[in-house]
Image (cartoon, rainbow, N blue to C red; front, side, top):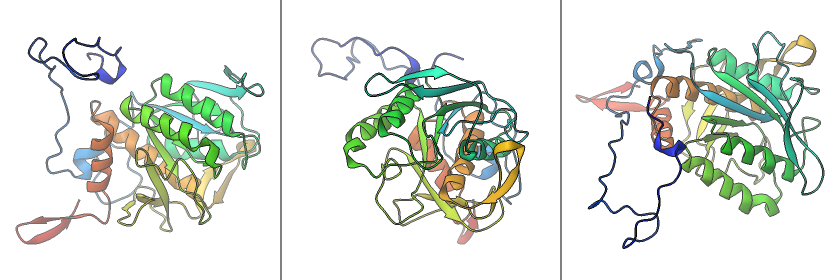
Length: 300
């Protein structure tokens, strides 16, 4: 497949037109093999039957690269099934680096999120970047360094089951989220578990996820009252945990990777889909979205 435009070097500026523009009288815009959004159903989106259940679609997320920014991931856990790469944000102050490390998770939180993604999209490629230390906290600088690395590496999806309430990080986080959006690296971010303002899940350039309390992993809802745009399974979710264990846990942290996995299924089938198209497909295939056909209302 030809390299998509969001992965290429930016074109040189053309004299006589404003910055970011294209002199189309001299160079025709390239054709863009975009996925049309006609009659979107779950079957069209990822090969699902539209009836819920643990459906991995036709391709299982093959060819899609996902980065999990969290506490690390235990690659040996049966629910995870291996990693493409494991890294950690290391160092102090302004000298932070993103370096390879053993595929381990001293807490379990990142392993849980990775296991959920794998259960939805078993053929997806997973990479772990450890930015949190004890499962609850980490420095804002480490989050920024890890996210910056993930965006520059060109991942298709980044799972962020974390957030910060510290407003001093808002401008740089916002800039990174926008940069990711324009590079077609989509951030899937969990809402805070408490009714507080935090970031980056409140940014419009990310897919923001909170929880519903139903047991079906493929059931998700569009939320018409954002900032949390989608609701996915997040209550008493069976998840991988440290020491090779499995537990049931509750939190928006575990709702987000359900949506990340579904996004991977969609992108595996529609490789040239843009971020706003992907969000539209999620909306159109949500369990509570209905369409009018000949006077009747049918679910996607």
